[in-house]
Image 1 (cartoon, rainbow, N blue to C red):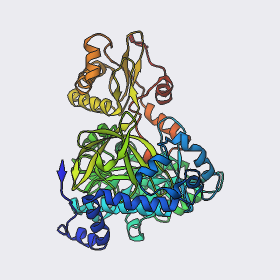
Image 2: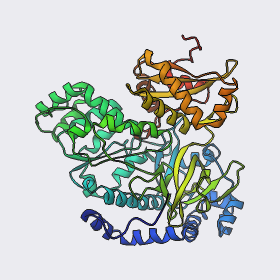
Image 3: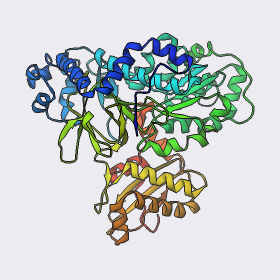
Image 4: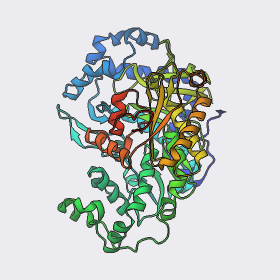
Length: 548
């Protein structure tokens, strides 16, 4: 897909008004997309200027670096673990470690089974992120005027939930984004900020209690499975929510566990209303103009379930390639496959399987590459471990979509099955099944002695599993030629579906939250690369091929 810069003057009234207030940003973004090399050189100078006087900068001689080639010679590509000693110093409260700019906050990543990472936030980094966010918002409003009406419900984690051992505040990036919005934007959210600090189930119940009486026109979160969970809880909690609506209270269901002082403060903002009649689906309860979330990679399966869960084909607008480390690719138009690289923000490189890195704006359509970033927060040549596919260009700048975490494969016989392939095969199997959709699934590879894939599935009746996994196998063979070859030659046996008890993924989610992961950003565990990951996700060993 190739396209011209889409944020032109024409559009609906709210878009034109919003664009007028951001004309300088839009003009700069258009110039950057037409000359990404110049944009990246400008951003590199700013990042080097902030990093040169830091401890990291002195250790790597950054005061002598003038261009990307110099940075590549001075700083090797590093994964998070290799940068951890520097990040530990930041967390201890030491100043000037990665950049001369003070660290305002540490944001936590969600992770899958490991310890959440904590990453620094600085003023210039926030400005870069906010510029990408503003461009995304312009694209959203231009495509869906209705999102500017009524209320906007954001399902995020708390902006602050603790402090590091050195005294720095710790929180989530999604909560930080919401908290950093102008006051008139925050007023559109019907949920008080205090709700975000509640335990997850209680938080979701309170969120629904505050949002139900309001005309919500847009839902925004990171992971589409969060929206699926919201839809399930609406049906499950209809009776207690109805009682709380009638009484003007927050006392039923999970809210029974609410601290009395917190309840009194929140109930001051509630009123008695008649519970909605008819279907309790998001689209029936609210005049939704759009839902915004991840749609690529492993999230694609869950995004495809949204129309059924929401109760109507609500347009789904992607949030782009964004993470706690930064904002890297922005969708500027509806229906975009991924987003265009934000070359006016962080410095972006891509790395092939041989480890050779080059400027990201030189990537060609069809390539699949790892993303390496240098940010205003001092993460220089940081391997994001994200695999992206180049799907076209906007002006002269590549458009990319997220494929999955690089290096996360199921690979017992050279099949190299990726997260993206598993998610797409599950989507194809579910579409063919035409029955209930799995609420969660995780695949792992077993060596026994001929390798095979075990797919744990929650939400399907046992009688449906054989047909579902057969369709999964067929779709995976179409997606992965190496897997197809190994199945055809008998080097891999057919996959087996293992039924997982209801509540398996809710329990996994609870464990991840207890470990410190922000609930608004939890990534679904589509694959488990080893037995330890499988057990951490499912809470049970892999059943033998003949069944438990």
